[in-house]
Length: 188
Image (cartoon, rainbow, N blue to C red):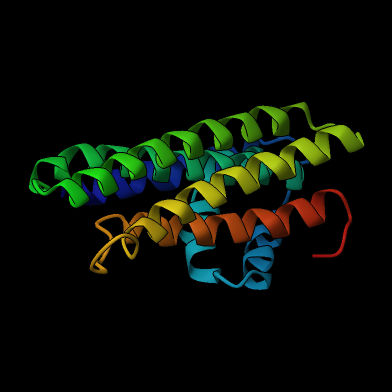
């Protein structure tokens, strides 16, 4: 009964948001069509297309970028929390070094994605802002990739405890790449 009530409240919220959304809002069907254009349709729909409150408020791809950048930050913050939870399981020097490198790399990624989000908030079409946005996204992408690479360096290869977050971040970065291309009308 409580679940049905919550579902009804969620549906009511979506309907109210639709009724009072700005007339220049980006139609949800456009967001769903966009997700179909990405290499990660399911992940896009899960992390971007299902964010009804922000999607209804989105007016263009610049707003969709902000949603994706916020999702990137969530994934990176969850990875940092996971690092803190699994740190104690790595007692050997190599394991401690690997987890420390990953912590540093994910902190770099968190900072980079946050700065990209800040640049995205400007909604500027200036070349300098486009370059900074791309550079920030690239820095975050490279940081999580370097963490993943640590698990096969300097000794026996081991599966990363952050693989789940790494894959989500990489996929979300690919989605943001498509968004940036649409925002600035450049081929991707």
